[in-house]
Length: 448
Image (cartoon, rainbow, N blue to C red; front, side, top):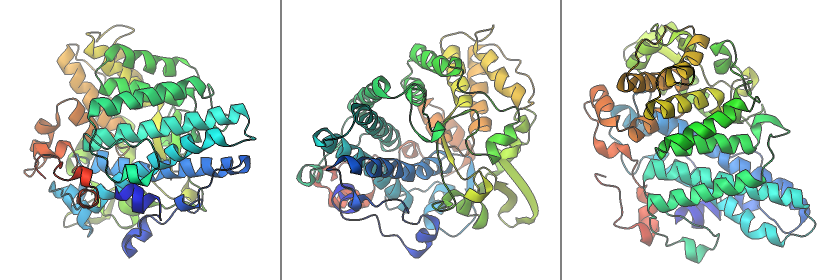
């Protein structure tokens, strides 16, 4: 596999000059600098683990929002044009970048899990925490990988001879490994991180399990884990939705990827703001400006001077630069837990009442000063939840995954783009990976 033999072992991916502007090499650590032979190495390797994971998060936003109906192409990059026109190919650079970032995270996690048991002088508490962090982030990477690409390789070692020829693993097996990693992490992580939402805790794992079971359609468990997070009392919705857009580490943040002025690549800010490579789609602009969305229109902003030709004049506000205090990428926040619980309750036929789906939606809609929900039957409530997720979580990397997992992608996306095809419910396996890994040859996703 390229991701193990070249990208991960030898060096970080060498990017074109444009991509270097958007995504420079992380300042804090390079993967080929990792060493874990003594206790003093543990803090740096931990940074390396979080750094590898951090590189994934902008790709999650690109996959979740660019593949779906939240954006339209407005620039010059061919990869984003493919997303905008719904003509995605296996040679798309963002498709291969995301793959590489997933396996970079998996590699560092496997590196830790292999080496840490033999390192002397590490306190048992530190050993348990780093092991749990490695297992959770490996599990999360595999979770995103299988819902992006389908059946994917499942490496559990750093051995090159083993990893260079791994074929695709059935999604059910991948998800079983994800669940095992999550459960192991849940047992050993602290209840709450002493350093806030930038690091892992049991609450993060509970939020991940709520999302995991939602995707699995295990409604009872999705509701249970979402409720555990909601009832923990550790998080609260900010009164003004605008705060979610313009501020890092709000009171509702469960886990987010933090940046400082020294290491901020400003990738999403560059794409959305300075280069305007992609802009909010006309359809999203319309719904965010509706009474149903309410204050969620704060996610985007309008400048009449930019309105010309294909440019509708609207810009995503959610990602700035570090000095602006909104450069972070949120992985989990409390509002998603209410949305997960609402969907799980509705799917179990529990729409109305104090503990019904509509009650959870109303909490978010009151915060957004949006119009009241009047529907009560299951089908209409589920559609209301779908819309609420688009309003509330726009540009946080959920939309495409939501449409696919609910079976709504074809209906929604065919109406959005004449080029939509059901094959886009999965991204292609990167062609570069197929050429380098014999185990993937002849195993491309259908239609690519």
